Structures are given as structure tokens and as C-alpha cells.
Amino acid sequence: MSGILAGLSDARLYSACVVVILYLTTCAYFLWPRRRPAIVTAGDRTASATLIAFGSQTGFAAELANRTAQSLQAAGAPVMLASLQQINDEILRQAKQALFVVSTTGEGDAPDPAAAFVRDVLDSSLPLKSLSYGVLALGDREYDNYCAFGHRIDQWLRHQGATALFDVIEVDNGDEGALRHWQHQLSVLSNSPDLPDWEAPRYERWRLTARHQVNSGSAGDACFHIELRPQADVSATWQAGDIAEVDPRNSTWDEKLEPLPHREYSIASLPADGAIHLLVRQMRRPDGEPGLGSGWLTAGARVGEDVAVRVRSNPNFHAPQSDVPLILIGNGTGIAGLRALLKTRIAEGRHRNWLIFGERNAAHDRFYGDELEQWRAEGKLERVDLVFSRDQAERRYVQHRVRECADDLKRWIEDGAAIYVCGSLQGMAPAVDAALSDVLGAGTLEELAISSRYRRDVY
Image (tube, rainbow, N blue to C red):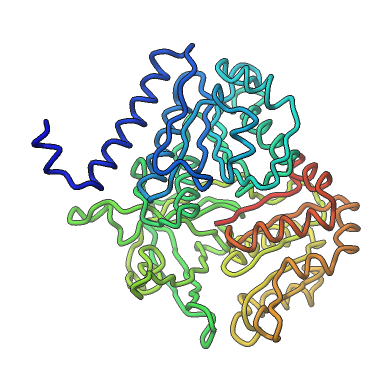
């Protein structure tokens, strides 16, 4: 054994030890469910470590938490993995970032091992304003209180002042699409877009029929409007808010390629348009090479070529079913998801819509500007506030416009408006969340989130 270990590099030995520790922790949870498992750290145990807390009834949440820890550790991020049995006030107060992977059992109840956490933590108050968090909620839609425990944790954290990194991700009976979305968020949080998928998705063939740059001369990276049309045997069904998952380089179709992690893009169109429309920014790696997914869609794939695509339902970002006012806030390529929502609202004859959108320069970055102006002129888009950060000496962003529109925002909310946010997870989303909290009050924003009137699709 000593000879084998000597042949391993320190980095490989370290990684192997971490995987073994995480694996043994999960096994211990399965084999001795009544014991209180120790907290396991991977990487330096510092304030920068991401806390991964799981509440599991059958072991599935523990398995997913273990995979989550392995993914972040593979990206070089320090983690702390623990059952909710081990989470107390002190641990939560010290954490800066936490991910909760929790199941719901019975009629909306917490898993049995989480009973002490519910009694000692969820029934108390803690100052958690420095904590950012995400929740993966496991459940079964056949039950009335679907994913109730995950939502209870989310609501409690919001009430303590913690900041949600993204909306609760619900998993219905192990739904693969929802789990891939969780993995996508892990890649964003760890700044590691090449994290491998846990399971390879099954793609369909769509044809790349149009592609053109929409921001020539921009100070930012090139953005492309892309159209993908389904092949005859593809069921082209989706709703505004849904996501297109793309296989870079069609790796699952090419036996010469290693399977590549999927990329997610907000769909900017409706089935009535006859094609999936995407707005893709050509990201660059540190060495200047195009990003894996964006490079494939904007330059690698040829117009007329088939592209491997799968549509993932994103019900949390579907348009409101009732005729309530709708406030849409976003930046950059986030306009794609907001455009689809506007198309749905207009098709339904619901015209009380307000868009607050930010980009760099008005001269180059007015994405879908002609279309938006036409909708406003026709009375289908009641109000548009555009913010261009670099058109004046002092940088201005959408969160600044949110604060400036405080009185009008309050009136719209009093009229029953919902708020949908789409765009960058880093920067825009937390800044807008803080602005809305200041304008509307933290309690009001929390109630809007609980009642599904505040929804976000951020990446």
C-alpha cells in the first residue's frame, strides 16, 4: 500500500481522501440512522467553507448532498457536510454560504432525523443577514404539501434576514431536469462551468436555422440571437420561463468525444414562433478561448447543422395564471426569459406590464429594442425603464432605478402585482433583492416570495 500511495501526487491523494471521507459519511448515515453523524469538512475549515446540510428520510437527500459536496470540492471549494441533526445556532451564525438538501415526508413533515433541528432551530430566531443560501427540496407532487419542508426552511431563512441565492429548486420524485438545474447552480456558485453532469441527459435534434450578432460595437462580449427549429419527430412544446439545455459540440452523439456538461439558456420565444429563440453571450475563458457552450452555439456549430437540445420545464418561472400586473426586472441576456413572459402576457391580452432592464450602452445594447418599443406604442407594455450603466460618468444599474421608482412600485404591489427577476446571479440579483427589500420592506418581500409573487431565474 505504501508503494502505491508514494506514486500518487499530493493533489491526487488529497482528492482521493476527500472522496473516501464523504463516501464513508453517507454510508454511516445509511447504516446507523439513529446516530448523530459528525460534521465532515473537505478542504480548509474556514469561514469561506460552504455548509451543505441534508435532511433525509430514505437516504436520497443524503446521497444528493454527498454529490453536491463532491462537485464543489472538485471545483476547489471548501465544504462542510452535515446532517440537520448536527446543525445548531452557532454553525448557522458562522456560515457565510449554505446549501440545504432536504426531503419532505408524510403530509408536509420534516424527515425524522431533522426533528431536533425543527425544535431547536426552526422554532427560534437568529440574526443571519450575512448568510447566503440555496435549497434543494425533494418531494412528490401526488401529496398536497409538495416539498413543504424545503419551503419551510426557505421561509424561515428569509425571515432571519438571510439572502436566497436563487429560488427553491423543487425535485419531483428524483426529476433529472431539476437535479441538472441544481448542478448548473453549483457550477455558477463555484465559477466552474465545466463541472461534469451527474447523469447524462437525453437530447433531441434541433436545427440551427439563424444566428446574428445583436450588439456590434458593444463594450461587452458579443451577444447573438439564435434560432433553433425542431426536427419533425421532436415534440416542440414549452412555456415562457422554460429552459433550453444544450449539449456542447453534440458530445453525446459523437463517440469520439467525452460527454460534456450541459449548458442552460432561457428561452426567449413561444411555440407559436416556430422556433426556440436564445440570446447567448459569447463568454471567454481566461486564455481568451470561447466558452464551451457559448462558443459552440455562437461560432462552432454551423447554420443548418443539427444541435443537441432538451427543453426543461421551469414551472417556478411560468407566467402568473391570473390577470395581475407584472413587473419584470433583469439585465444582460436575462431579457430572453423576460421577452418570452411578455409574449405570453400579450397573447393572453394582459397588458399591465412594466419592464426595468439594464445593459451597458444604449447605442449598442438595446436587445429586442424595436420590439419593446412597438409593444409600448401599442399599449401592450405599459411602462419601460431602461438603464445603461456606461452612458454617464457615474455607473447606474437596475437596482438604482428600482429605488428611484419606489412610490410606483409600491402602488403596483398594492394592486396585486407580481415581480419576476431574470439575469445574473452575481451582482444584479442580490442588489435588486436588497433594493426591493428597502423599497417594499423585508416583511412584504418575504410575503411576496411565500405567495409566489416574487420569482427569480438567475444564473
